[in-house]
Structures are given as structure tokens and as C-alpha cells.
Length: 171
Image 1 (cartoon, one colour):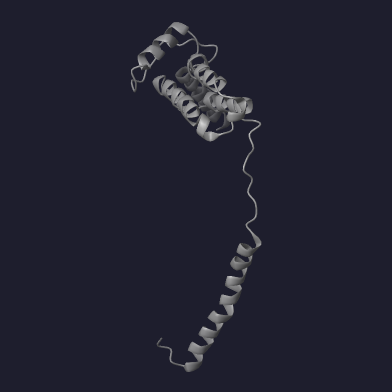
Image 2 (cartoon, rainbow, N blue to C red):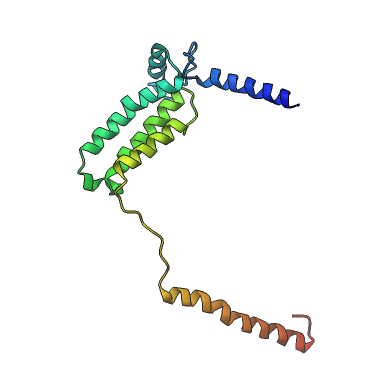
């Protein structure tokens, strides 16, 4: 049984390498999505690249998406990087760019390469931005939230006792 499972694992890993590209294996046939007018250009570039599809994705993201993002961020003052209103459109454009290229190359999005790209972006541009930490609510709100059930318990017990003492049982 263990031998069969091992064979199936090796077979599946071979299939995944053939499907998504392995850094050691060049792409022979390039399936291409057609969601945007740029898809065929991206696929043609990857065919000429003659490498693994993930390497091609990395190159395209670096030269098309990251270059535009870095140029846009350079046009801002570094103190403005932490203001979401200033970077929202640039960040959104970066996300859309990585998604478009991945979709065209029929690579699931998000993928480890894109995730690492965004981690790198955050560690480069947003590491000094203050984060909003959660804090306790004011004491008056805590008091109201605690005292309300405490006061309701005796009232509810009294209602139950009164209803059962009457022997009415109908209401």
C-alpha cells in the first residue's frame, strides 16, 4: 500500500511540474487565457522566454507591475506612503496587474509569487507606517455591558417564580 501511495505521489508531482512549469523544464506548449487584449502578448513573451512559466510570470510582474508601482511611489513623499488615500489607486493597480498577468498565463491568483511580491512591497514601503492597535473601550461602556445582564438575571428569576406560584400555567 505504501508503495502504491508513493508511486501516486511521484506521478502527481510529475504532472504538477509538467502543468505549471518547473524551473528546470522549459515550456513547450503555452496555454493562454483570453480575458484581456494583453493576454496574447503576455503569452507570446513567455513563449519567447523559453523558461518555466513561473519564471516568466516573475519577470513580467517585475517589469510591468512593480516598475509602475515603484515609479508611482517614488513620485510621493515617503511621509505620504502611510496615508491610504494617497496609495490606494497605486496599490489597486499593482494588484490588478498581477491578477491580469496570472489569469492570462492561466496561473491561479493569488499564488506564492504574488504573495511574496506583496510581502516585499509592504516590507519596503509600509514598514514604518503606524498600525491601529485595538484598545479597550471606555470604562463606562464596559460597566454598562457588565451590569445589564447582572440586573436582568434577578428580574427574570422573579418573573419565573411569580408565574409558577400563581399556578395559572396558561400564560
